[in-house]
Image (tube, rainbow, N blue to C red; front, side, top):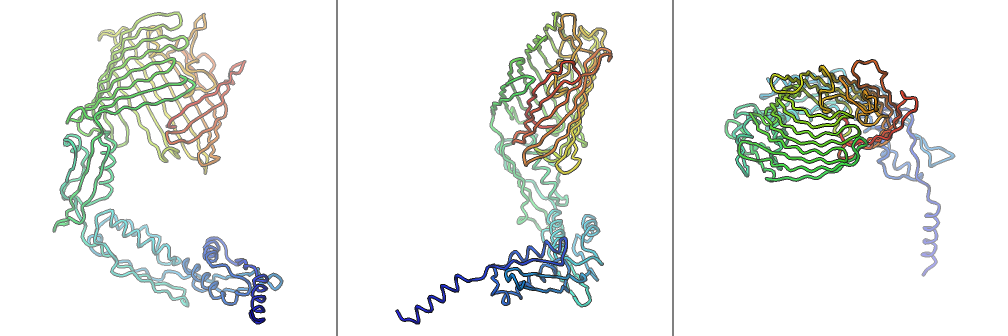
Length: 571
């Protein structure tokens, strides 16, 4: 090999060894969004070593200019200076200058959208206004919002005839022209149903769109949601056939429905400190006949309680909002001072209104053989009543807002066959609110009252007890109650429970909590209320929050300590 080639190789190796380090661009002179946006643009530049800086100055300036122009600043001053002592340190000093503002905004709606009030509302709320700093992102957002609304409201031929921005940096002004032609608004057409069984009696009450109605995507979403929530179908599809619209702009709707299996079986398991471990199984028949009748049977077993129930559902109109149920069940309970065998049969009429309140008007018969403390007795009751409940939640499995209310009124009279005369009222309300980032408050109030000559003439299932996971933590399940001379719990005419809990989110699926509970079960409110307090953790799982609480009954002389464990939704 010649000496010249060897020399070239040596020089090449030496140049590799002394290659300058990549420069660090230090941005100065900007603040807030201007600085963060410019930094993003600079970070996208390739690595630059000190010797290459002169060649890349134009690229650095272009990145700064593009970043500022996107936010409306077209007249920046840029100074790029390398440190004499540290060539790998480069200062990029920028003065943004005065922003370009929208001088004129010419927004014209053509087609049927020109008389659509929804478009008028959108135009009035647009973030693009005369006098504002012209920002590219707001301009693109404005264009996208008009097209999005057009698709949602059936303007499938919508387009921009003209979309233009003329920027005059020297005048610090921009003229914006948008001419939006929506074309005609399409209408709902015929309903084409593809189902694997007769669904007319179930489907018809749920379909709120009629041929000739103006198209709205939200109406199709509501229909799909209602069909899925009805419990009859394993597969639901609601599709607008836009390509098959007729000359009157009517779009056929394809509804694809696949029924659930004739028999569905589920098995579950759980645990709570009130009941200990428990298992459950259910057998559902979603379709009894073409009228939409359905049947659900469930069995729940824990150490203190065994429960069998059967529910036969009969739609009357909308199967989500209006239906009857015929229910029956048998329950065995052996817990502390209570032993009971209870047989129940009832008829219910359910109605749900537009405010999400569900009303249940019912008449229930129950026969109970029981032992409560030293008392042994039997009871037959025929109980008409009414119940109202509502649950509202925002945020899914980890709610950020919500509330739940339930109130029930029941009556009994000997003259229609009951053993005992009474009026019983029970209600509960729960609220969940996010008060700051990562912080929530959960409050609960519960009140029960029964007006009866002698509470011991009522079976244990209608007396009031409190204490446990869901009422006053720090005390055992239904431990709070008047007692007899033997220390056996008797149950009471009245019960009150109040709770306030503070949660703080410490990780994606973890919260810590502290709480204060108080309550009583009493015949005259002369006793001191029980108070429990403590701390807990919350772990979010796909089936709801796992809640573990360490609670102390601080109202007692010898303070009891209990660990409470529950699983399920918080509302």
